[in-house]
Every structure is written in structure tokens, then in C-alpha cells.
Length: 181
Image 1 (cartoon, rainbow, N blue to C red):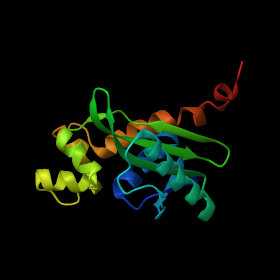
Image 2 (cartoon, rainbow, N blue to C red):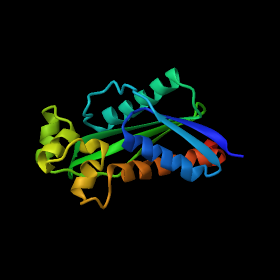
Image 3 (tube, rainbow, N blue to C red):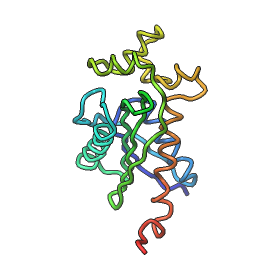
């Protein structure tokens, strides 16, 4: 008999929903995964700049989901960009919450062309910048900047999947992560 596991994702973007569904199906193969996306406000700009703004956006989405929905797990992903000392990059924060524990994770960086980052500082969203540069339509719901800039050797979904995979560790080993000494 399959047990059902309900997951609420703080976005209707199919890339984010698919990444979450994949992770929970991988970690809970004996469960039926009911993974649904909902509109959840980030309460940060559409294009977060900086690690803090990006992380807060993901946490706000999870908090909204917890307040308005019933599920076993709540998941949110927020993409952002920052000018680091070594160059501009885009990345994502992920938050997973099961009402007992909240875990924050982060993806790897994708170096961004400086001209793309400068466009973000002027108020454009990365997906729109990529669509213009590569003559694509709505790439943020497909492979994203990651897919375009890596010639599809990595994608937005694969990056979210990796970050979520790592963020699940404290849920899998609660006893180890609750120890303080």
C-alpha cells in the first residue's frame, strides 16, 4: 500500500514543481507523491539581488504556503544574482519545511556575463534578459539561463534538484542534526 505524501511548492513554475516532485519521489519511493504548485508571494523584487534578498524570498514563499495550505512538506526556490569579488553570478536558494524543521539550502553559482548582471541592476529579470540575448521565449519555465549558458549540459531544474537533494539531509538524519555536542 502506498502512503501519500503531500508537497506544496511556493510557485506555479513547472520547473520548480518538477524539481520538488523528483526529489520527494527519489527519497520516498514507497510513497505516492502529490506535489502541487501554488502562487506564493516572495515579497522581494521579481529579480532579487544579493544572497539575503534571494534567501528571504524563498523563506517568505514557504511561510505563505504553511499559513495557507496543509501538507507534509513545503518547498520554495528563489533565483537571484550578485556581484561577487570574482564576478557576477546567478544562484538559487531553496527552503524545505515540514512544520517541525526548516532547512535552507543554496545552489551552485553560474557565472553571468557582466552585461547581463548590469541589466538586472537596471530592473530587468534574468529570464527576460536571456530571452532577448538568445531569442527565446519564457526560458525561465524551461532550461533557464543555466541551460542557455551551459549549452544545456545543466538546466534550471537540474540545479534546483541538486540544491534540494542536499537540503533534504537534515530531514533524513534528524538525530544527527539535532545533536549539539
